[in-house]
Length: 122
Image (tube, rainbow, N blue to C red; front, side):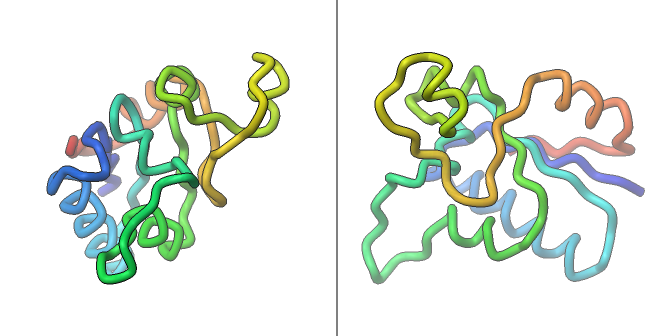
């Protein structure tokens, strides 16, 4: 059974951390799953977030899973998150998309929803 984990909560939300926990559990069980970052969830992909040394860093936790980390390009750009290609395209001075995350269109979310057996939104 394939699962789509749709992360729409900001990184400061406990729901965003629950999504990570589910992803880790599915990975440990070697179950098929995908993730997609949308709405405020795209902020997880901001490389410029600062987290105190005594706290867990959600972005790094996702990166450590070594899975594909697709992020909605429109939602990211609206929240000031961009990769180098989109920064050039939209005349933005810098890019700040965290390593291993990739900006994609909503078509990818539609495909993921259609192929998943279950969808979990956090």
